[in-house]
Length: 367
Image 1 (tube, rainbow, N blue to C red):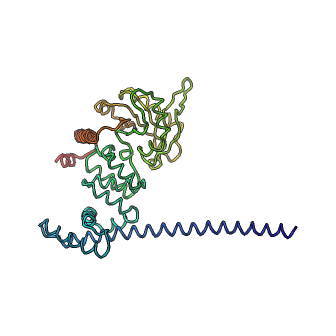
Image 2: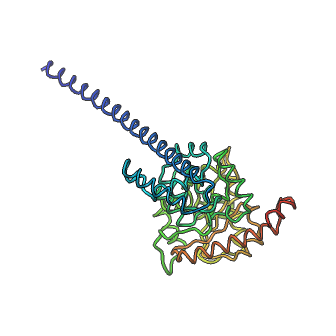
Image 3: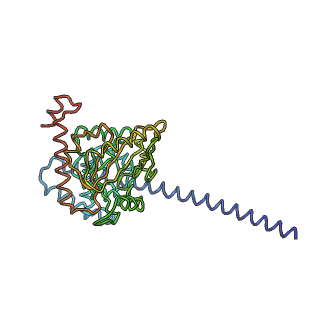
C-alpha cells in the first residue's frame, strides 16, 4: 500500500511538472509568434514605403499624369505575375501615396514598429496634414485597433475635439508635444458633441435613465470619451456640515492625472450650471485630490447649448468643458456642416481675442 501511495504522489508531482512545462513552452510560442508578427509588419511597412518612394523617384519631374499611370500599370502586371495580388495596381498607388504623405524614412520606421499597414492605409485617406497627424498620434497612444480607428475617423473625432477649434499653429504645437512627451492636454481629450447613441434612449427619459444607460454600457461610454478614462463613482456624495450634494459621474484620467467630474443635463446649458460644477471641482480639489495629481476638471453634458452663452462665461479658466450629447446620430452631411461651421466660428473668435498671442503672429494666422 505504501508503494502504491508513493507511486501516486510521484505521478501527481510529474503531472504538476508537466503542466508547468506546458505553460512555459506555450508562453514561449505565443511570445515568438507575436515577435514574428511584429517583425513581419515592420518589414512589410518599410518595404511598401520603399516601393512607393522608388516609384515616386522614377516619375519625379515628369508632369504628365499618363506617364505615371503607364509605369504603375506596367509594374503592376509584372509584379503581380511574379509575386501575387499584393502588388496590384491599386496596391501600388496606395504605396505611392503613403510615400508621398510620409516622406521621412525615420518616421516611417518608427510607425512600422507601432502600427500596422492597415492602420497606415487609413491615415492615407485623410487629406488634411494636421488631421492625419492627430489620428496618427492618438492611435499610437490609445492603441486603437483598425476597426476603432475607422470608427473614430467616420465619427469625425478630430472635428469634435476642442483642439480642432484652435489656430493651426496651436494644433501643430500640441501635436508636436504629444510626439515628444506622449502627454495629452484637455483640448485633445474633451470633445463636442459626444455620441451616446449606444444608450438606446429615445423620446422621453430622465437624468437617472441616462445615467443608468451610460453605466450599463460603460465600455462604450469610455470608448467615446477616450481609453484613459477610469470610472470612479456614480452619484458621488459631497458633504458640508449642513448639506449633501451628489455628482452624477466621477472618472479619473490617467494621462492627465486628474479627476474628471461629469454632470448630465437633460435640458440646454444654463450659466447657473457653471456655479454648480465649480463647487464640485473645489470640493474634489480639497477632499479627493491626491499627491501628484493635477486640479480636477469638469464636463457638463447637456442636450443643447448656446455657444455664445458658453463663451461669455470663459469656462476654460475654471477647468470646465461644456458639450452637447446626441443619443441619435444625425446624417453625416448634417454633422459635417455643423462641425465645419463650429470650427470656423471658434477659430475666428479665438483670433479676435488674441489671447497670449503676439500681434505679428495673429496677423500671420489671419492671412
